Length: 242
Image 1 (cartoon, rainbow, N blue to C red):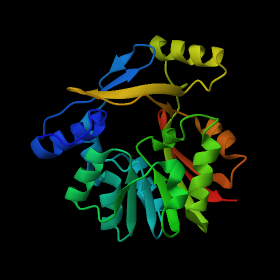
Image 2: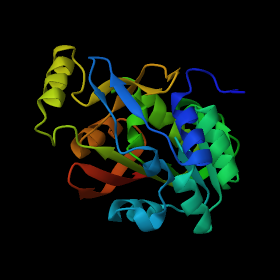
Image 3: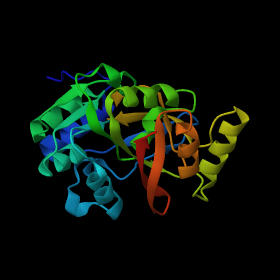
């Protein structure tokens, strides 16, 4: 009855919300901190529900777009409606299936670090919904950003959104930042997994990076930050190839 792996908690949540409009998401951090974020409706939101940051991000996109971590397709669909050819990539089989069902024309199961293996070159790559975090860590960032450089044209644009982890006064987060510093890690590096009903996702690293941290991380790559639009702790950055 259920052909999704038990590790695809995100995909099962997307599927149930898509099919029945009723689901939830639980994020567990490796220090025991647990929270329920905005909910699955966020991943299915339409442009008329987005903030100005979301609109700025899709307006910056050009030509053939690679949507990294596309989930159930909220950004891919909006970009298609704007006339772009879009290829979405994600690791969640459930989310990929939902994206296809919702009308994303090209969606494939790929890790962002393997983006260079995709056929063709992209004019833009987008990492939206805080998906700059998919670089994972300062150590992994050059590999991911290098793969995206190889997957895109010489004049390509990279559009990435993130969350400034230091823009908080929550002791649970501030203590975690100190825990990271004690381990010689960036403060915004988090190790998390998604849980949904009987599904338990795999532990993975995700990086929240302040704009200045993003600039530092791309300094030794082919990317350069051109512009930043910010709303509170959240922001979207436009990068070009140096």
